[in-house]
Length: 330
Image (cartoon, rainbow, N blue to C red):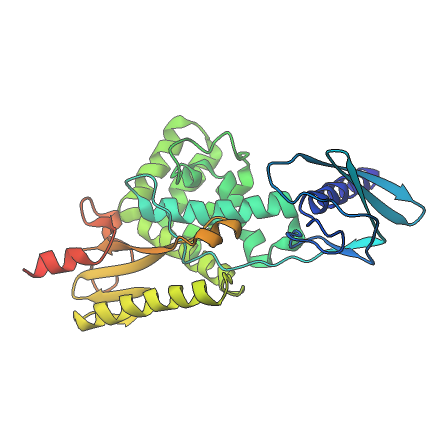
């Protein structure tokens, strides 16, 4: 449609402008070219003398027949970059091991909302081509208020996402797939009579033992959707740092009698899942910040899921390190 063509042209113009803002001073190479927009058949004029980030640089996009021109101005100097088009590249990565814990309580649900909210935002800004069929099937959950109630940040998400009956339908269907007819009935009741009380009724069930089957079903599907992608690449040194920390966690837990494989372990009635904090952007990777935290569930039965303790008051918590095991064994 005409609207979609206009939006595509606007996005292309924005990416071209970003390229100009990140060019180096020699006029022949790009210092920080965005990963999803690469210029083709570049030719350039003169060079910009100052590479300082404190010097204001502006860009203007022009057209000359089939070519694009980017005129970049800095102080009294002008740099012109001509190219014939843009090629688009997109890379998506796993997200199911990530865990950011900014809000205390029901961390297991908040973690799922964070993951699926990330996928929803990917769809919102990059379109359906950036999402797999499994991800597209799960997206309506963000439009289901009882699910997004467990915001991973200290504010409600209700103003960030629409509310749509498709979300409640999906929630009820997932409860049925999990074999939880009681939860399915409550969600269907909310669907028929969406109000504050029926929403509270579903949310209250989700945080107790009655919510565990639905949680496990949603968690499994998010893990499967994320597992289709490769791990994020932070560079050789940072990647090795991540692998080293994972190996250390595995060695320490198995030495203390836990069985399992990273990131899930069990010993008796205690279950532990490792969750990773990653840098938010590639730029942050320059000052690489990565750490592993632990979702600890106690009093778990044989058939309880990995976060079973979080559905029983006082039996689930997030630990900053494994030092708590030493104190417990003293």
